[in-house]
Length: 64
Image (cartoon, rainbow, N blue to C red; front, side, top):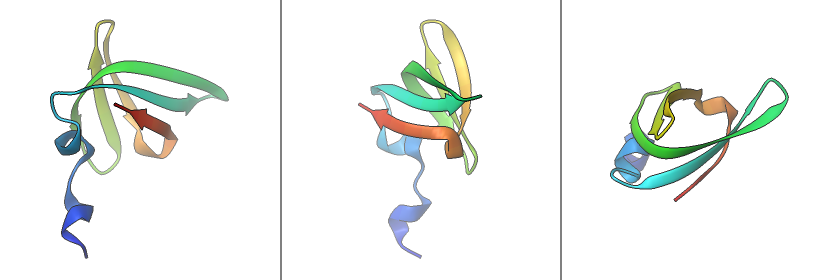
């Protein structure tokens, strides 16, 4: 297993404002903010409107 495979998304994008696009019930959703935590299944995005927890399988794109 490569060492880079064990790193989290939050470690790569720490202290950076990002835009996350994901699908939810046949709709495309967009969130803007900072990724504060992630694990094997979820990404926690915190922005001006609050915090959203998104399943990694549903993420379409993350843009910095």
